[in-house]
Length: 78
Image (cartoon, rainbow, N blue to C red; front, side, top):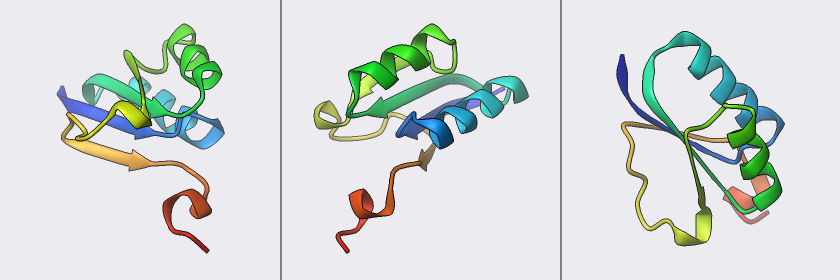
């Protein structure tokens, strides 16, 4: 079992990434990071992530692997 996975953005794509990572058994912990309390809470309730954090509270990502699953304009201004 590997280390910690951080999924930034736990919407449809991020939730699917977290679900696949959970099913693979390849990570000891999956952290969800986002801006929506609703989506973070739902991901926790569905067992897709082990911890939920708001993006605004994160200065570093405590993980070995990070996957960014947010709309492109939120990553790079267009």
